Image 1 (cartoon, one colour):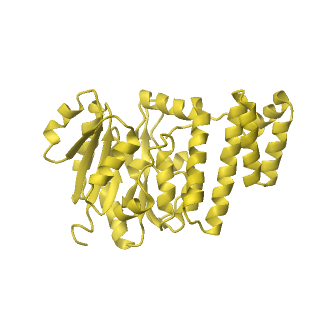
Image 2 (image 1 turned 180 degrees about the vertical axis):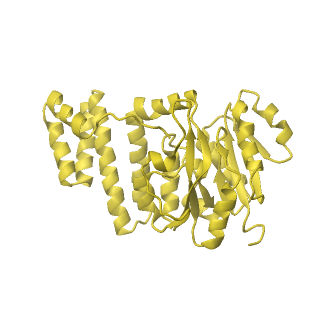
Length: 328
């Protein structure tokens, strides 16, 4: 490979993360693979972010913009990137030294793969360190590196792709469109699914990223996913509908997406009903049954027709049992 063909652009968006940002940058500078550029996009920070970056200015590209959200910040970095491959690192996380070396090495072995992900380790003040594969109960092949030949259904169902481990071919990224600024929940999943339609992915079962879950971060994620379940389902319905309408899907991919979309409509209706928005809930239930006509889906729909106190009690017990979640 020439220098251009093996170069990596690393996008680090940041907003008021001055106390953690330099550790993220240091973890990139410690990489055993050195053909990269670092692009830090300051999304309107009001803390001392620029000051703490002063010692790094000769080794990074620093871009400042008014606060417009993480999707827009990542897009700013992508447009400025010059590498063949684009990787992402959140400003309060860290890479292991061999992260890029392993991923670029897998690209050289399989030039046809368009993206690559790795296992990661969650570091939290509340629990023992745990890997993403353990959280998702994903059984990886014995080989430390493997190829996901049909990544669309894999990403749709497994949910083991996360932004700090993700690296993608730049041309592929521009072909499918960048991050969608219209959504602020599940924006990474949206991008992963669009990229997954373009070809095989590589994957390493080695945990090559440390993702820190600090108290403030965990609280924010709980608010997004637990306290705002309606917004979360609306975002996933929007992005799945967008993919279904705008992208050519193979028949088996279309079947899987339709099934997942039907389930999301049902979950949306369930949370709307609990919030007292019964008319909207009924519309969402109807959309669910149109898309997903399985026996299980029909049983769930019938339960919604029963009196609330009984029907939704059964739904709670059978389909929506409260579980302690690990938010990512």
